[in-house]
Image (cartoon, rainbow, N blue to C red; front, side, top):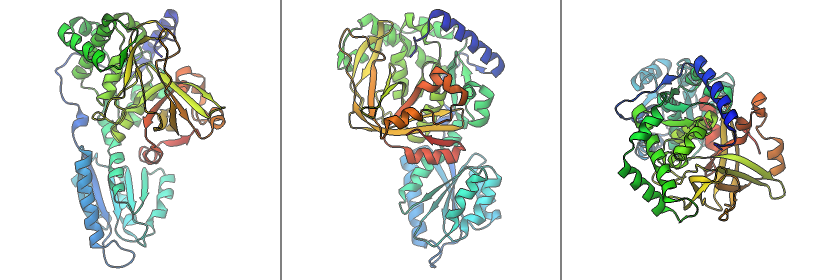
Length: 482
């Protein structure tokens, strides 16, 4: 939450944030003409048919290869931001030529076409440090699938789709695009930061993920806020009011101030040409208009936005935006009810479109902020019965993970002040296990840091399999908390 700290604690955190900046060499944003983000350009993936097809039991047939090519073409259309460079290779020289054609940033999707095809292709891929996915049809007599685990243990970024489902080619491509998209990504930030320390060390984030951190220029938020067009703000406020199931406590002026803050964030995103936003200065912005509606709106549009300065969660949201094209609900772990095996997650900046920018909105109420008793935030009515995945990247090297089903979305009665406005109650397989294994032993000393331990991000759907593959491709561990 944005307001857990006192003014003294807030100012102290701001000072520490300044120290982090002084040693971290953040890029400083400035006013600029809006332009398309680099992540809008297509990602090239080198699709290598590994080995010669044939009519033997240990080879893919020409018909199977044709089916794979057809499915790759369909994946290009479905994913929208992927372009395949497809070719056949049976040795290092042929592989190198295909990699050169695809370009230095292209990951590899290898399709095993021969019993020893991958072993003749993938070493060249590994030498160039490219992430790779191997698609292997288990009904064909190839054996190279069993080498994937040893390759991974050697530090190779490779994952295996051992499957007869050609749709896995598209699933592999969706995950392969993540690393190149991260290297193109820029995130606008405002300290003080929270989370594990690696997540807000600019050089470390750039080195491990390729993401560039850009600081909001001093005073720029105030300058934009002062210049927000009144008509546009009025229209934005009216949209929030019209689309709400109910406006409970906020006045129209409360919603209008929040709309001005939302439009201010939009301008900051546009002029800095960034792909995400992480703000640790919520406390200093509240009296001018709650930014919570703006965070909801950005996440709905596919621009990850995190409050509380939580860079762990922001980077998590960026990764899954590139992988799944979905928004995540960043929340406080409000507790585990072991009598019900129920996990509670709550916050005030919940996205409405949880299944992508074009998906239907979840119903919502407009409420005042529970703790400061003012402003305008959403109370979102998420879908009961929906399977969800709860996750977070910590220390840039571990993805925490558990799944469950939403069994309750508590309603906050008018006049009652009880924590953050949007809350989901998620049934998990073992509440005691979740309590005992919170953080999975991966947080280390950061387990004592309130926000590093507290926050998680929830996604509609069970993405366990995708997260395991992502871990292999990004070179990070996956730890299941339940």
